Length: 171
Length: 279
Image (cartoon, rainbow over all chains, first blue to last red):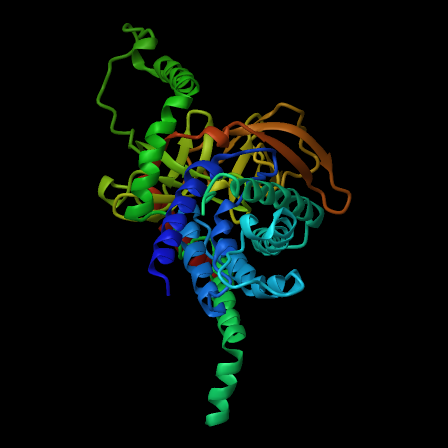
């Protein structure tokens, strides 16, 4: 276990937490409350070698903190745990022909724009589907729920892909 | 036993996932179905302090609108002051009036966290048990009804917002006192629905909706909104009325917490009356 990496991801966690609750949660784009959920970047960027169960624990731990701040018990955590669960599946599905090389991280810098776009889009979509259905808690306004899912996914993916050009650029 | 461990080892990832997912879904379901259950909330010292800090900066942005709101409220209160009336001294002698009992006590507070886009929205407020906040206090601002206190920690409290699909607030049409309940449908933070107003009542667009005071939480006559549109239901004999809310929930900052000092007495009496009816 690389201690330096642990510190780096802890820093990222704190940064994403405050960025989400202080800035992004105040963004209001439309009546529907579409806003980017950039805190998911932490789960996306975890190294390939991270044990799968660790990803689940990090997902629920981090999302529960977000839940505490938002007065939304279980909402962010159920969605993020699901996202952590299907991460290995998505990674397998979109892997390059020869698999992933050793020593690289799931980032634009190593695997290119197209790969990262696909990777983040599918995982964010999975997260938002669970998130908005748990929030809505019924199938009554299903067309609005789908609209929220699609618009939010586009918005979150956009923010997350763009962010790759601003943080951790070096190395 | 050995094969059991092998099973765990093989499927630990899926088992852990199912366990964590069920855990968080239970949290969500619990808070979705029970009005006062909020197992995870921001009325704790860490998130409370952080939100207090943020809102002290955000306040500056909304100062102008907030000032106007308070001025309007002041104007209203000043016109109700004794000094605004002229006493006809030839007819009245002022006496110490024992017929007046104080029913509501007011306290000012600040909203430090608010949401409007979820199905179940809550407000976090910067006063708690130590400052005298208790459950079931009404939350209003100069524009009208905001919510009801449901959780109190020592320095913070959580109010359920009117923008929450779990609650209905007893309301009436001001001009003829027919009452029903205000329910939010979860889609638009500017509008709510007034239910249970019978078909034969005459209403028109722009009519004022105020709190009824029946629930023993809100004083009677606190503004809720105005009628935007309405139509008659053919199946039952009630209207469906869309109400334009008077409070701008996007910018709620300074609020009043109102305590009904006679609430316990009223509830006790109502309970006793119900018992008599059952017997």
